[in-house]
Structures are given as C-alpha cells and as structure tokens.
Amino acid sequence: MKINVMTDILEANDRIAVDNSKVFDKHRNLVLNLMSSPGAGKTTLLEKTGEALKGKLRLGVIAGDIETTRDAERLRKYKLPVVQLTTGSACHLDANMITYALPHIDLKKIDILVIENVGNLVCPAEFKLGEDYKIMMLSVTEGDEKPLKYPLMFRESSLLLINKIDLLKYTNFNLKEAKANARRVNPDLDIIDISCTTGEGIPDWTSWLNQRYQKKFGTKARA
Ligand code: MG
Ligand code: ZN
Image (cartoon, protein in one colour):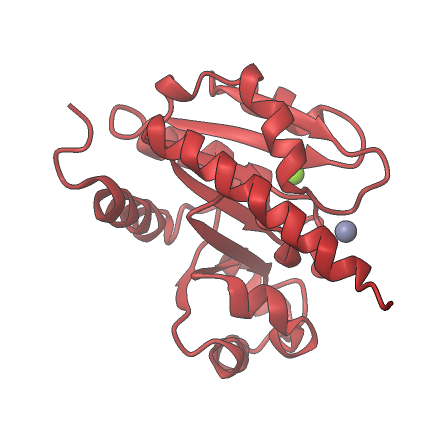
C-alpha cells in the first residue's frame, strides 16, 4: 500500500480550514491570509491599515512568527485586537493553529481579520487557514523574478501588494517585469503598488478591502 502522507496532511488541514471559515462567517469577518518573505513589510502594513480604516471597518490580527511576540506588541500600540501565534519551528501557519487562536480573539468586534503568516515564500501557500483570500506582498528590495521562482504563492493569491515603492529608484527592481511575471503565473491577480512609508497606494488597498467586504456581506453589512 502506498500512502501519500502530504496529501493526507493537506486534506486533514483543509477540513479544519472549512470549520474555521464557518466560525468567521458566523461572526461576519472577512479573513485574509497575508504572505510574504521576511522583512517585506507585513506588520508595518497592518499598522498603517489599522489607522486608515479607523471609524470604517474594524481590523483584527492573528500574527504568526517562529519566535517572539514583537509583532503583536507593535500592533497592540494601535489598540488592535491581536493574537500572536509562535510556531516554534514550523515555517508556516496551518488551520489547526488558527483554531487554537480563535478563543483568544473577540471576533464579534472585528470586520476584517488579517492572518499575518510566517515570513516564507514556499509552504504557507499550501495550507488553507479558513481565509476568504490570500494576499501576497513583495517588496522592491527583493527580486522581480520572485513570481517565477515561487509561482504557487502568486497563483494562489487574489492580490499582490508591491511594497516599498518609494525605494524603487535605489534598486534594480524592474516594476513592469515583476508585474508581467506575476500575471504570467496568475492572469487574474490584482496588483497595487504601495509604500507604507509615504502612504502611497494605501487608499487603493483600503478600497480593495472595502470592496471585498461588501462583496461578502453586502453594502449594509455593518449596521
Ligand atoms: Mg511581521
Ligand atoms: Zn512551512
């Protein structure tokens, strides 16, 4: 008998992810799985997003890291509901870890829940968490060939945020080429250029969030 261990693991994971998504739907949460390599700017984006959404949609965060609670501490300063998951050695989050986090976050007080995945361009894309959308962040201090080297991340994502756009002139990152590469692996991908430093593109990002929230819950979603 041949057992395909990875297939079994992923199938078990997917079942738990479906259970998570039912909990999120019940609490009217739009849930995003935010993925990138380390240092692309995920936590900084969440700081800016919390500010930009203030008085409109309520942001909450589940932050995954291998060690430390630094990201959660950064986000708590912005008074965002946040849970930190430290994975020990695991280089990605899985659905079971999210299930464990749920009792520690008040989902009723959240409209948009972002799950900040462990910084890693490989396996996070394989594990569903119960999210509505996967979002990929790529910064211009990385290579424009990344979509071709790590196609699964880009193929699975609905939106690509190209961050640190203010630094573009100091790099040899080819923005046009990066976008063409990303669309080569995923023709339907939305792409937004942003800078968390200058704020460029942040309104486009928050309007993307708004649209997706309304698509899921309707325009009168939040009474
Ligand atoms: Mg982080
Ligand atoms: Zn992993």
